[in-house]
Structure formats: C-alpha cells, structure tokens
Image 1 (tube, rainbow, N blue to C red):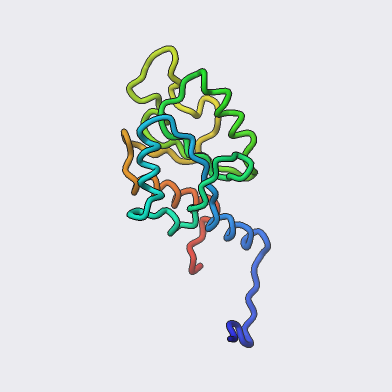
Image 2 (cartoon, rainbow, N blue to C red):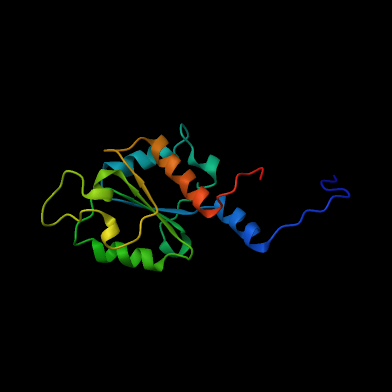
Length: 154
C-alpha cells in the first residue's frame, strides 16, 4: 500500500499539533442540572459526539482539555469549579452550557453565581434551558474552529 508515492507534504509543526488537538478533544462534564442530561443525549448513539473526535469523556481534570459546565453553579461550588479548571491540561477550553451556567438562568438570588465567567474564562456560550444536543455539538465545532480556524481543504 503506497499512500504518498513520490509526493511530499510540508507543514509547520504548530499546524500539525493544532490539527491533532482539533480532532482529539477530551471533554470533562461538570453537570449540576438538566443540561447534563442533554449532554448524555449528545454523547449517546443518536447524536454521537464522537463524529467530532470528542468521545473520550474524562472525569479527571488532568486528562481533559475541554470543560463543559452544565447547570446552576452556586457560590459554594465556585472554588471547586475553579480548582478543576486550574488542574486541566493547557491549552484548555470552556463551554458554558445552558442559561444557568451562562447567566444564572432564572435563579437571581444570593447563592447562585450569575455566570461562570465570574471565576473562569468561557470560550463558547450555549443558550437554552436546557439546550438541545445539536447546540452542544455546535459549541464543540466552534471550539474546533478556535483551535484551528482553517478549513480542512485550505
């Protein structure tokens, strides 16, 4: 089997590394509410997030580079969430899934954080209460575009 025969492919090391990062995201779910159930639907066979190379869901921050925060975050949970973010591999990305993670949702009281961007940077916000699995997959695609903004055939 000869793939390249007499052809030569040249590229930069950074492009090669970003290509690998783009198609090998290791997400870590941090689910506290109904958005986490939607994430379960996203990784299930009907929607199958593995099509985008993000099927290796890890529950250890040291093995993850994509944090999905899904649900309401209280101020009591904030130090835990921040520590998880700090323990993740660099480079890392964060998706705020749903209205509660993005803005506190309809919980406007003293105990609920009004958006996780108060403690950690967010790369992509997913609107909805709860958002559909297609919206979560679209957020993963947006993260992939942030990692390597060029299209496949460029």
